[in-house]
Length: 518
Image (cartoon, rainbow, N blue to C red; front, side):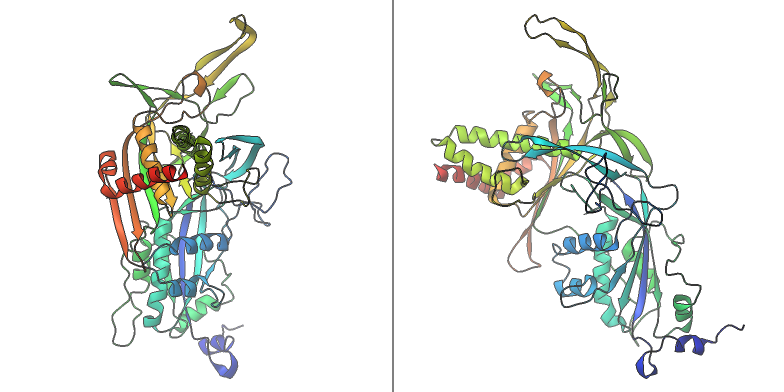
């Protein structure tokens, strides 16, 4: 049988009246790297081990990232970027009035993957900052370092002048993904689900002008799942990859399409980078402390530090002790509650002040069904999780004592393996911070810099778990009326934060709110 001619091939896809579809297709490919443990749940679990299990591909049994899960997270992120017009974002990702032009494909890990693990968590009642009753639960996670192939089909108009604004939205979304700003799945406020796009590549299928592109796209050998061939430049940004792919596509008499690197910082989100050391202050000296976070029991009276796969800056994956997002969030939650209770106790009407403080506290940290609120509220604060840097794992023996005789209890020797010294930079994000939030966190940062923050981890009652803030960076693009106007705030140290008149005014309003309650 002879191969069909170009015209015979094209006639298969002609619509009514013998016309071809008037659109082109941009195929964008990348590799999606999981940076922190991720759980995209399957909607329920009958699993005897985990309360939450990851969704899996029916053919391979491998964990899967559904395309809409990723594009939904991207669409939500773009809503806080004033440089991206809402109409253009709706045209690309869809809305009630527009069909989405981006068709993402479900992603299943490449051979050699996946690696999955298990994480245990304890639900904390925000109103008391303590563990809720019967609130221990576990979840299956896709481990950091797992790689997924990312494939987007993007339909664009045949006129480059109409296609460019739409592709600029795609570049903005892909850049946010390339910079690791997107989180997927559950417990993202506690550091889970951070992903990053790498090895970007793109190709234009000119369905209106090149017969060869029709043959490649529609031929019988095209399976609908193109192989991810190595990109021309593995280090290329999404903007550079799309610029290269569309270098020959231009309107009659016009210049080729080019894309600049967009500014993708979200508006209305306070971002703080606080470097916390596992240290405490003794006089004029800083002394390393031990921290034991979430370590599993091995069954032989040994409790080890929590270790998980960690992705390095060079892309390598190693097993290392981590500072979990749950622990970092718990420290902030309990430090905030400590500050609020101290302020409330000093007021003329402590009970009324504490009730008002609790409302603000739940508004910031969120609630859950076990909490005494009229409706469940999502958390407006999020942290990251990462490996400790410069920490050593040590072994500490422990003996349980009889509380009356103060003598060791027979058979009560146990061993723990906490991390000692070191630290890491904790990233904190607060969405739509109020004056109360800003004033509260000014006091919290002061407490952390003085080493008075809440202790973290096991054995905190015996002196472990102290953490000390040694530096802080901050940024906040404050919305100023109609988008895209913003008022930028930048801080490079704790001294700059506490000396900023804008912050001082927010702290004054925070204190004034307590006074008004009384």
